[in-house]
Image 1 (cartoon, one colour):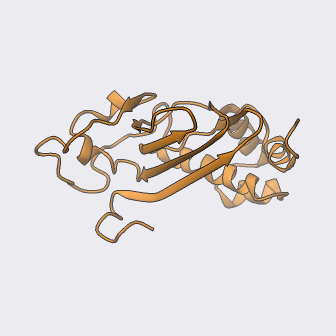
Image 2 (cartoon, rainbow, N blue to C red; image 1 turned 90 degrees about the vertical axis):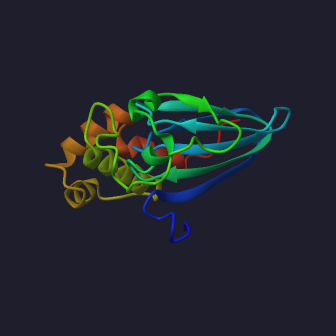
Length: 182
């Protein structure tokens, strides 16, 4: 959990380690938030980047051993640190600049940015992210999940989920439960 002074802007920290004998393509469903990411993969130089809000499903190829750590900001939470229009980051990954932040880049409040999820609203993005997290938890009653998350019905959930991930919620859950190929 972030330090109390950072909680208005930082949602959480995350860490992924891997040691693979075969390359693996990980599909990622975007969250409506900016991440500051630090990566170290065997045979490559360590680096950091600012990952803007992605507009759709994307894939990251993992191989060998490595680690990725990140700071996920709350929607709008990165704006005070960026100091420029957030739209400049949409769908982009920028190398993390070296040195101190630009002058005048002081936190101004947690939701100063306005719309941060291009093409849709934040509620839809959060609902989809929650459905994806629940799908990863295992077999579910999808009609109950749809009702709990505020979808009109199960078909509404399935349409939005499939549009973002490329597969139905049940297929997504099965793919996570399946043993790795190879």
